[in-house]
Image (cartoon, rainbow, N blue to C red; front, side, top):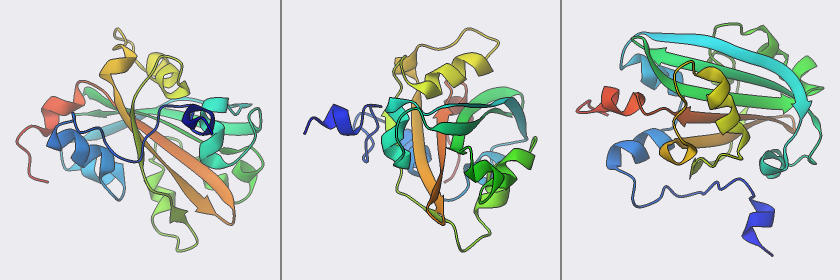
Amino acid sequence: MDPEAINPGNWHELAPPSLTHEQKHWLLRPGALTAGLRQLGHVDLTVVSEYTDGLSAREAWMVRRPPGSAMHIREIKMAINGVDSVVARSFTPRNASFSWWRGMRALNRRPLADMLYHNPQITRSRFFVCRLRPSQPLYGAVKRALVTPTPTAHELFARCSVFWRHGYPLLVAECFLPGFWPLTAGRPK
């Protein structure tokens, strides 16, 4: 079977060898990303948008749902000390956003980590990483989140994983913006 048919979003289980040690560290860092970002400085979270939309074919394989399924989507931007650093796109089936993942609708300016890491019923998949492509929904979220000119897709590295609770997925995809990497230079891991 064609790998692009299974994984049409350019996501890979292994970080490309061309990435720096620092990039690999952040792309594969376990635990809550927000906690790591807070070690770099003050984190300000802005909700860019929350809406319902059909599941894209590029993301359907990750959450084991058919393309077009109704999803509740949340897009946010995090700045560290005023520097735009991460854009995230999270989604769950719309019906799950009223049941098992209803907390997602009430987060406002709080990170998803506030509801993900304290419940033993929740499991997390392995990470997938990629260099973004213009056709990926996460790149669309980056364009909506930034007031400044949007970096080209190939400049952006992202990671995603799926949290599962009672068979219902919550996908979290996080894109590291170019301004993020200078903040990590020389910082201990």
